Length: 472
Ligand SMILES: Cc1ncc(COP(=O)(O)O)c(C=O)c1O
Image 1 (cartoon, rainbow, N blue to C red):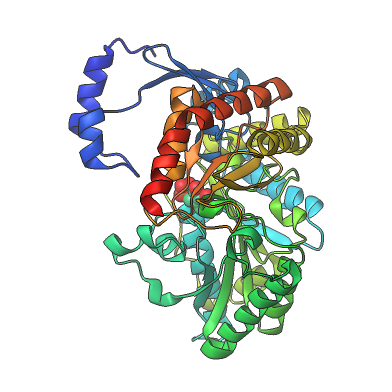
Image 2 (cartoon, helix red, strand yellow):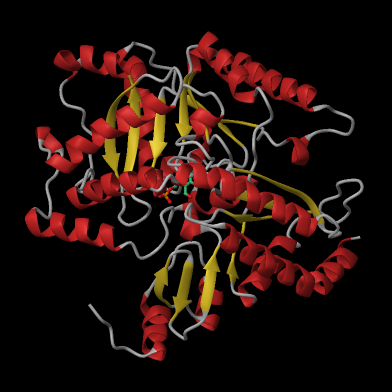
């Protein structure tokens, strides 16, 4: 379909009628939308013909790169031969049933000691997290553990914006306006050695402190009141927090001792982002439930998946006669077009060996960004894994003094990057800009990202100097 409206007409329609997510209404009515017209690989074009290098793959999701005709063909075939079926009362279709089988096998064959048994389909990372929390509650109700429902979630964690996912999210800016039900949540610290260690504390001592905190929190609340712990393998939106060595191994020991299930939110880390098929493999995690979205379809269609382990499933299954149907499901969950696209996306990911590419080119990009920022006075740390990295800004590098809250050096950098044709993102919890490119990125693309990023850092330096002067 071609649209023939002028840029001005689109802009007017958007300002007058479109309510955007994560956008200031006041700013939008003044500056208007970015109108994206077309895209290919990791480059996108706006309606005025400006080209941008998309170093964040949309919202960490466009893993296979833009403009895959093969995926368009699969969508067309699925729409013209079926178009829709739901999954209530045992309905299914070929693409949905086969994708469920594929996901169970893919997870279990990639992640050591995992015991995933079933897949429930939704459409977003947020709803899949809600599903996992509901299933945890059902699991504990069926076991007669009626009070075991609170959820341990980490500061800075991002789990989405439905009501429950908002509460799970550990970024206060998401809570206050919406009265998120945070009384169901027990909040603990995020794991990032650089950001949160105390002066003189080694990484091992820092990890000990995190584990002690977890044990204390469980003792304080009572293990009988805590049903789950939810965690992203690498905290993306929170600030690109890569956990310290041994963290997840020790967390899992504590959870097992206290009969608390582990929900791993792989919405960002799933399907290659960390340089392994799943972040659970990278960090030696054997989850009880998993949340998948984004890379599942490479963002070509909305689809999420909640993976349920044998431990949970066996309780649900054995109580089924007495309990009746599971009264949870979405009209569009397991939509045939989305599930057909997901199977094709996984086929391409494997065929083009993109998980390895994420590891090798991702690491190259990380090293190049480190080199390029080594002497820059306001870059405190560049960290990452696979094809995801974050640059953290500090006011004083020597003693790790952060900019005053609200100053926003990372926002100034991200805005400047745009002027140099690079899309990066200022994250909402700490002063970090991130890159998480499509996994198809090659070394030339990586060099180009670094070149544009370096130019942006150079031209934004007077602004950061001014921010520093205002802060100190
Ligand atoms: C780790 C994580 N979980 C959940 C979500 C929510 O996914 P969605 O925006 O599809 O609801 C996101 C989105 O960025 C995410 O990064």
